[in-house]
Image (cartoon, rainbow, N blue to C red; front, side, top):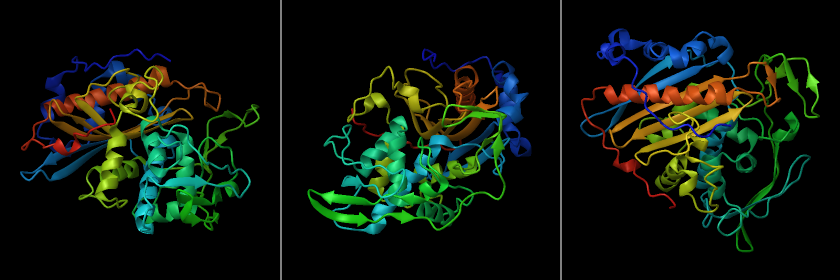
Length: 416
């Protein structure tokens, strides 16, 4: 994988053409498409193959009033909430938020995100966790799992939160909060059956040797599969390594539409404007820190910068860049699997006092075969994400604002 690209804001776009619609005539409903079509070199092939690449983009402008209260204006490109795409690791954000909310709602003295959290096993396919060598005290806890989810997109961390919350509770809570098309119905990177994913592990929270709270094994009583089969591609590699000449079945896979992703992110960044998962101010501050913290700024563990470079979990605006300048902060959650690249981000440029929300998905699987590891991430996916971020960032740099935002609340002290 080529990891040597540098972050550059390309200046070759024709500013006079792009920004001639400064008054946003006709609500500028084609804004994103116009921006992309003005850079045919970067986006021409993708625009000509939208069905194959399954591109969806939501860009939301943020404007502040004199009291710094935000208002939002969203622009959509090729967005269809019913069109299936595999959300990959983006589902880890709702799991992290719901885990914190569940701890709050339990309201047990001594039980919080830093309490020792042990996972037992009680059903086929389950595994236990009694320690975590990457944490400061070498014991697992919810806080450390969430940190690993946002910084390096750890799969096992998500699975442990899924097991704590439970399949049925996850989906009931999300649907009650308005995320009605989202379904989280399986662990990640573990080939379990539908029934095995309905069963979640017994868990315990400890203070020393004393149990503060324990939860028995739980089985979901509900069926979250969609009404119709979801089949994609022409072939796939099965769990035994055999090539199967038939479409790959996504029917029993997770799903989260792009708009629901962005609304959930917005509920964390701007909780006063959007209903969502309810977090205490302390838990929200914790999420904001690790949602935006880079691997090189992290303790416990200290990540190798060559492997876990700055843009490891920041696709938009930086692609595969090794370094991200400290003047830019990205609060986000990415996903990458089965040829899908997704990023759901709130981006701040402190140098230019710019902020915006940008969410995007692209599918790169030219041979239409799944699980073969042959996806065009480097050739198409990462360059698309980087250039899309650059184009929207450049538009924001030139967009007039009646009131300059005060972004000081997002200047965060990181681990190091």
